Image (tube, rainbow, N blue to C red; front, side, top):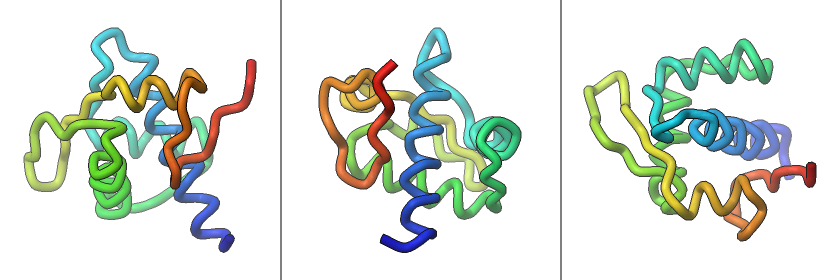
Length: 99
C-alpha cells in the first residue's frame, strides 16, 4: 500500500470520527478540512477533501446533505457509525483502534 493510500484511509476515518462527535452527526467540508489539519496533521486542499467525502458517500458511510459547489454539508450514516464503533469494517477506511 502506498503512503497516499495510507493517508487517504486515515483521513477518511478521521472525518467519520469528527462527524460522530457532533450531536447531529453533521459538519461542513471546510470544518472537516480544518479538523484534518489541526488535529490529525493532514493538510490537503479543498478539492481533495471533497473527493474523499464523495468516496465515503459512495461507500454509504456518509450522505451529502447539501452540495454548495465548493462546500458540502455531510451527515454520518448508520453504516459510518457502525464503522467507527467497530461493528463492521468499511473497506478503504482505516479501522479504528480498540479503546
